[in-house]
Length: 592
Image (cartoon, rainbow, N blue to C red):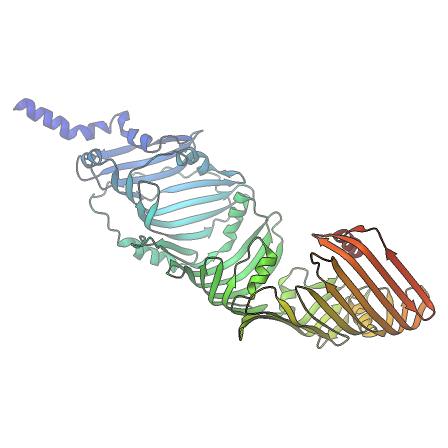
C-alpha cells in the first residue's frame, strides 16, 4: 500500500516536477517546430486536469532579439486530456501579448521568424483561440516611423486544416509618433488565474467598447452556414489611413493614402451572388507619392454609401453614390465588369441596364490638385461644371446605349508676365456632346444612331455601324482660333467657315478599309506669327485612301489627295503601299 501510495503521489505530482526541468518548453518547441528562431518560457504550471499555464513565453529571432512576448498563455485542458486527444487542444488564451514588427520592402522581422513554420505541410491540432489586450508595434524601417495596434482582442476556431471558422478581431490603430528603438520589454510575471471555461461572450462586448474610440476597428465572421456561405462584417471609427505607408513600404506601392475613415461593410454570400453593402466616409483624404510623400490629390470629405452584388462577371448596383465638395456621382443598375478585351467589354455594356450620372465642380477639382487644373503652364481652370451621364436600356426589342457630356460656365485665369494683372477667360457654354448607340433584337454589331458635338463655334455629327461611319461638320474657324488662342499658344490667327464630310468604310473579305474626305473652307484668312497672310475665297479639299489598321500600325495601299485654291491646285498620291506608325506620328505632332 505504501508503494502504491508513493507511485500515485509521484504520478500526481509529475507535472509539477516536469515544469522544473528542460521538458517544460518541449511542447512549445514542438508546436513551433521549424521557426527561424527560438521559443521559451520563464515558468509553467501543468495539471492532469484543470488546465495548463505558461508564463512569460518569448518568441525570439535567430539573433536572440524578442519578437513576441506573451506574459500568460492558458489552456483550459489538462495534460491528461491533451494526451488522450492530441487533435484538439481546447481553448488557448493569450493574455497581454506584445509584438514588435519591423517592416521592410522584402518582408518583416516577424515573417522572417515564422515563414518556415507557416510553410510546413501537414495537419495541426484544432483549437479555440482567444487573444486579450494585445499590443503590436509596427515600425516602418524605410521611413523610420511607427504605428501601434493596441487593445487588440481576437477569438475564433482554428481547424486542423489551417482554416479559421467563426472569428472576431478588434483593436485600436494609432500613430506612435516615431519608431520604437527597443524591443518590447519582458512582462512582469502575473499571478496564475483560475482555470476552467473561458467566457467567449465577453469578446463581442469588448469589441464594441473598442470600436467607439478613435482608431477603433473590428472585423468578424460567424461560422459558415450549412450551404457553405459565409459573411464578414468590418467596421471602423476614425481610422487613420496614414497606416497605408507601412503597407506601401512592405509591398512597394507607388502611392499611399492619408486621412481619417469611418467604415461599415457587410459582405455575405446570397443566392444571387456575393453582396457588399455599407458606407465609407473619409475626411482630409489625400493620395500621396510613396517616395517623397508629396500630395497628388486631396479632398476635405467624401461620403460613399453602397449596396453591390457580384454575379459572375456582372456588378449589380442597388446603390452606389459618392458625394464630396468636388463631385457627386450615382450609379444604379447592372454593369459588366471590365475584362481583358476592352472592345468586347464596351460592346457588352449595351446589354446591361444601368444609369450613371457624374457632376464635377471644376473649381473644387482644381483645388483638390496641388497644381490645380491647368490647360498650359500659365492657364489654370478657376470655375465651371462638367456633367457626364450614361444609360443603357431596352427600347422595344432593341438595346440602346446613350452617353452625354455637358460643360457649363467654364472659367480660367491666364497669368500675365511681369507685374501685369492676370487675364480672366470665360466660356458660358463650352460644349455639349452625346452619342446614341443601338443594337437590334437579333443581336449583332452596334450602330451609331446619333452622335453630335455642339459648341458655339462648331457642330459635328456622326452616324454609322459595323460597315462604316460617316462624320459631317460645320465650323467657324475664326471663333475656334480665337478661343484656342486664349488657352493655347497657336502662333496664328484665322477667319473663315468650314464644312465637310468624312466617310470611313470598314474592311471586308472583298475589299480593304476605305476613307473618303470632302471639305471646303470659305473666306479663309490665316496670319502666321511673323509670316505673310494667306487669303482665299474658297479652298476645296478632297482625299481618299484604302488600307488596313492593326494596332497602331496603318498599312496604306493607295491614297490620293487634292487641294484646290482658285486657279491653284495641289495633288498628291501614294501607290505601291506604305506603313505608317500612328503613335510615332502623334508623338511628333504633340512635340511640335
